[in-house]
View 1 (tube, rainbow over the protein chains, first blue to last red):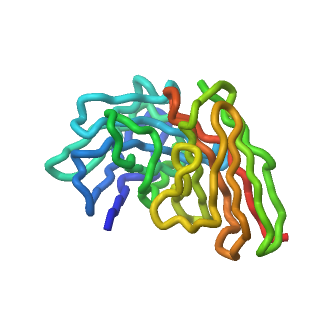
View 2 (view 1 turned 135 degrees about the horizontal axis):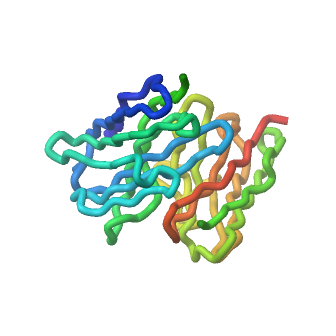
Length: 123
Length: 107
């Protein structure tokens, strides 16, 4: 059974940093691209960042480029999101999401999602 | 960035009725569209991928159609567990984007 379990969310002040983790199990982690997707009441669902199965390719939304870094440790079956220079508008529930099998590095849709971790940026 | 516009924002229907949800893209995305269902307090669940393919374990009452810029999700006969929010998402161009959602509520 595929499981994705996020952790690391919490309350942080503007300008602060946080690292999210997503522990994966039930599938061959290194074979699948992964993404972080966030959700706010006001803006709905927003794709944040993606990383290929090997970790060699990464993409970011413009809203987080230069501030967030996605990475993965395939030996630990874990996905990460390092978030720096946090802003109030980064407040959201952050989901990690797995891509279905595909013939390219990225497919771009998501067949499994974690339960989400809440990040609140406020003073 | 490709903008996805979903309509209506809210659909009020009774169990057993047919639901038709629309998603329109700001430019052609071929068939690179997915539909997700989300219930309160839960993560989204993949229903349809590549516009018309049901994901694993998704009941046959869910169907998707369309290509280019206009897409439809149809629920042929609403079950009580189908009342939820539905999102479309495109994977044609970076950044991948979602629609704002359609809430299907009990009338």
